[in-house]
Length: 144
Image (tube, rainbow, N blue to C red; front, side):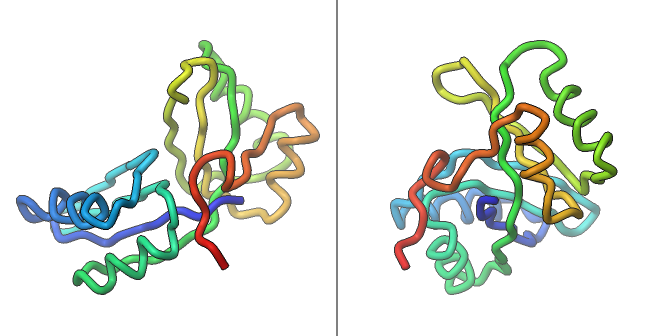
């Protein structure tokens, strides 16, 4: 499992830019970003370096941030790759709350991020032949 930063954000012009600028000014590198919106608020999900430090920074800047554990899975970047993973999760009775993906800079593989309702989802995917990624494979984890 990896850490994802989630931010509740007012649906107001410039607010997403302020969030990104705050992270940028702190030298925190974002690797993936997904925005889901409603009428008045949005939820921004971010995979970034030092997620705990990013959450603390965003809280201090007036954002409402939290850290959530999500599953990161490497998938060959080809048609049907995502369907293969979803079918493997379905076969184990594992529901997906939400998902988003990005392609690695090499273009050889995609990384899919899943919020799932089962703690053993990573083991189920490994048994099905997929590779769950560690935090160190995606970003610079916080030092403990």
